Image 1 (spheres, rainbow, N blue to C red):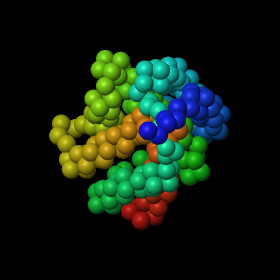
Image 2 (image 1 turned 180 degrees about the horizontal axis):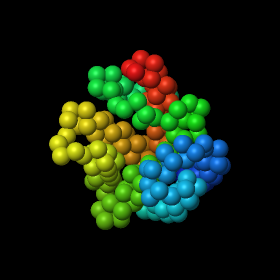
Image 3 (image 1 turned 180 degrees about the vertical axis):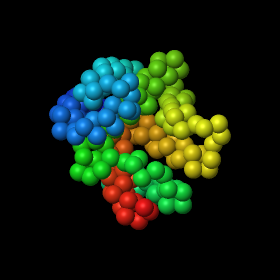
Image 4 (image 1 turned 135 degrees about the horizontal axis):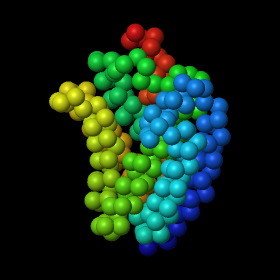
Length: 220
């Protein structure tokens, strides 16, 4: 039987990402800072990042200690995994092309290069690390943990955009986000936080940063 390789501690990666995001937040222009604060509690960006770090670090520590983040049998292949994010971005771009979202849904370049890596950490903490830690503490089973934790982000998106009924764009978007969350939580379980984060960052690159600029020229 092949010898398992223990996964490296992911907490230093989490801490380094939050430090980088905190430094980036000081370069937000006023509009970007307001956009960032609008995603949660209306706190200043640095305060929101600090709060998420205080939640995310214990959550990741528990998931590692409790065995949700499993040992590896072989080194993960990062390139195919990151390219999979393009599939989910293509779904979002197709929906946007057929039924355009508002023109101002994305942060503008070059502020987007600072905004999305920072807000990504908030999303990973609120929608993946914390829910996964809570569900795994109750079930001690990775399958329901992945399935239930993956519902948190699409449920939030549906609730935030709820107007009394759901149109097809909301339904497709929710299914797409659910798929993204499933992939990310699987990556967290099998390969750790770094590849999980890389997947979300690649998706944000395609959908929010590159398409976010192109759509303003093509759709409006």
